[in-house]
Image (tube, rainbow, N blue to C red):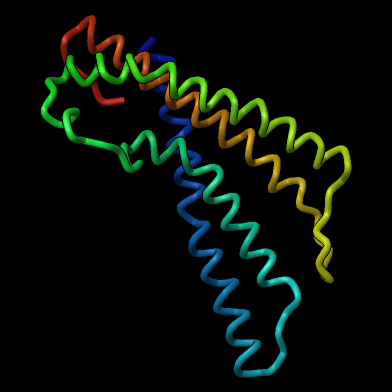
Length: 168
């Protein structure tokens, strides 16, 4: 089980490493547009739309890494005072709700993305870029989230068995 947890953790770490560059890409695009628009009076037709796409991919696919790093906002009224085993039990009890959420997101996201691929969906803007690759990130992000949640669930089971939490 630890091997599976390590594999998922490494996969999510790689996705996080890739995604850490997206804000920089977004910054370059926006600064480029601001300079062209304000200093050269030559706005682009693509900068706004591509920045929305980059931001969409970033937000859709970063959930797994955020979950791994325990950076999601959560209600910590009682959880913070629990023991390591108590936290593991609480996480195991709440896992089914997470599983249903991530599973539905994967299922509906897949349908949504496949319709976009089948239609070869493009934007209705003047630039008219393809947008189905961005929509494919929805099921990918949901899959990564589901994998990370499952790894954390397995880690919590090991915590109950061994009594101590190992680094994922």
